[in-house]
Image (cartoon, rainbow, N blue to C red; front, side, top):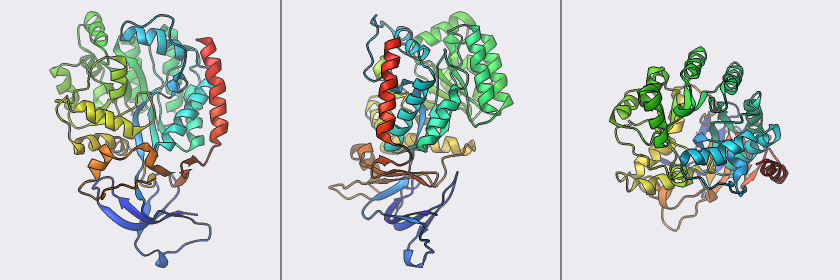
Length: 423
């Protein structure tokens, strides 16, 4: 059985070349697609599903470069008893309080909610960064199973940290070791200011053992740098470089706001990727992303704020106008950079058979020359009609196909109430 998109306007995500064609989609991890100009001459089985995409645009689906699924049940939660005065207090009174109260059911609900939201917004791959200090063992499998249930591919990690004591750090290392022995993934680290030298050394050993990279928050706030200089007499990126983390093209450095010229050069000359999270930075009041001398390996993420990658691109573009006049093409390049990251590192689940269908009925012409203008000023996730993940139709007419969305939302709402009562 194959899926055929009939009468589509196919947009090559790399070249932005438009082509009116029919698309036969092979099912399976990293499956291929076939562009068929004459459908009457193609071999079509009675079991094949055909979707008429007349007037619709088809292109590669999206991917999230940095997410926190565990934050999905935070929307509308009670405010902290004490109003945070700075970034560290935001972590302490909000996010570290929330993650400590996660259990099996709330982790599952958070993952289901995130995967569903991503799918409906056109993303079929999530690079996630998880934390649940009081439910560590098996937490990554819960997330993986939930993502798989919706039809979303993933690259997961557990956020290893010393902030809750050495025993929790060791448990995070063990969860990482257990998960990586069976799945593709990364070695997750919180941030330099919550990581001891011994924990960094053990994380480096895991990275080498599984030939992978780390996924870490870097200088999201000035405090990260102040702590590193005070304790280790070196800046955050220097510390990570000395541990060998920047040598891997699988390494993801999130944020990178408060870094100096030397750190920028270290990143630019390394194989690591940087992920920009504009809305989260705005929300936390920690500063603005500056891409100067960081190289070209810059991706976009949502940082758990939401699951809408087009929205992330729009915010990054508009904020970027005051930080060096970023162009349409550069923003689109960052938007799509995650695919290059996944491809060069041979992570599976983001093959050519991951597509979306856009029902974008523009009042002006859409073509190769002006598509990027439509991407910035016209397109939104509301235009996502169908989504195909690994050759399977996981969203049809904006409705998830592999789950009962109303049932999932009911489960999530119940679990959110349970979580809020524990806060």
